[in-house]
Image 1: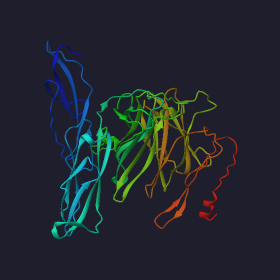
Image 2: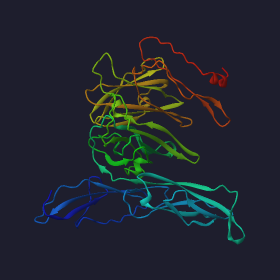
Image 3: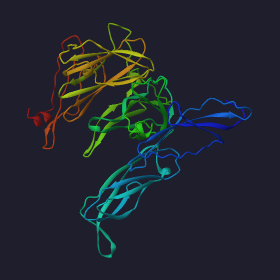
Image 4: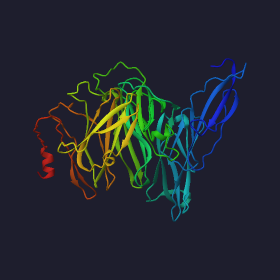
Length: 493
């Protein structure tokens, strides 16, 4: 702190270490900047410190503020900071039609209007501007559909709808809260951690992004701290955080969260990391056991890419920090995570992900077994920084070919808590299968129900269900697979 300060030294830079920064002295508490980003998005970093009126003494620098300037180009998705007063403008391009046809355009949500609202769609196409009212937008992702009704002019100037299918274009505006850089502390037991979120380039240069949904199932408004940490980063030293509030019984949508909320990946670089959803509001409900998940909050994610025929992706679960594992204190009864149905072959490849959650360094061993229960290679060691996430093709890295098998993960260091996942991808179709971690030997039920299995060929697609049964005990077990009469009949059994 500096006494008697009425002026401030303000630094602006495109580098995180403020190398080559531009410095100015501001008399007051506001400054204006104007930047354009013609090709790719650009990040600007700002920090400020006070200057004493009595001397030339300067105080410590403030926390860093990051502003991402997006290029001026057509965008179906934009994000703005909460409290924005100016109207929000997006542009979309509608491909041309020959012969030209009159059109009317509208939005299906009251907070958005379209200009021009009518006109002629000719061979050159038309660019529409969507104007959104920031006051009417809720926190998170707000979606609307722009609908073009194509018609034919008739007598009297009335446009009669023709048989052409209306053109529908989805757009969205995400209202975000300010983001602060810095490391994070140990999560709460009921923190939910999504082990992989991203905005990254995948196979065939397709762009993957992660959409998040957070549901507050309690009877009171809940505040959450969202902590994002880049992959292969020490989370205790580096990351980004923001705070949101979700009304009771409401679900908040956070589309393309890595870019829209945290500004990562907006410059075209591939970004992968971990998201922690940390409840900040105290409730009267407590966790019934160390392995219980949060009963006030439910979160889910979908990481996908967009293709001309639709989206393609997979669900990645939010895992309660209380379900992360540490080293067992009983060497005869190890705590192990098991992941079934992994493969590395000409038909499939497997991405293995692991996350340390406690903010402590961790050493783990990954065991690889085939479906006969034989360990096919020596245990693979992995060392993790505090809060670090790694995603690797562990089998390919170690020259392992595996038609069918499983991973087992154990912590061998005195510190650290981890969880893991696997994504098994069909090499022909790029269809992914997310494998969730299961605590080995913890299941005690005598009956399990798989709610949906299929053997269907409807002319458009051929559906099959592959099932894996794993016996974690040291004794032989009998398993009975009853099939309902209706299913028997449908399958011709």
